[in-house]
Image (tube, one colour):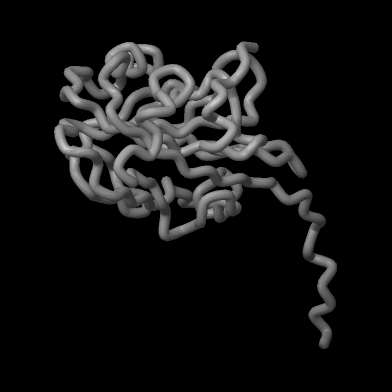
Length: 195
């Protein structure tokens, strides 16, 4: 696996630094956080744990809500890519590809269907629910990119097509990291209900 860019040392925590992340492919140190561009979520702070309601551990789970500040002037479109930095191999597992977002301050509500979505690592155009082995912790990197030209990709395009279309167009980027550990739960039926 290739080494991560030097600027990742200040942009991402150690456990979230994967050389195959979209940020490593199309982002730059100059563009990262440019003009105070940030990505946040009302459901978790940067570095905190994802709620199970956004994972395969709960029924009716959905994508988490996201909010972002105004991108730099000249932004034509925004792209969100969510990847599992704890993946093995040269490319991280891709959980969400979203584009067609207006180049302005905005948000996606919890479970909201985005304007355009591409194929995740399971080949579906939706939020791929984290589904981990018991006791394993993974780090998910929510990456936001501001582009200087609008994309012409059709919905359902894959990660490589999206990254190729973004090449040389990123004028700002931001990242938000969350971790998740599937609890190794014991059967709770032992609780004494005779009290």
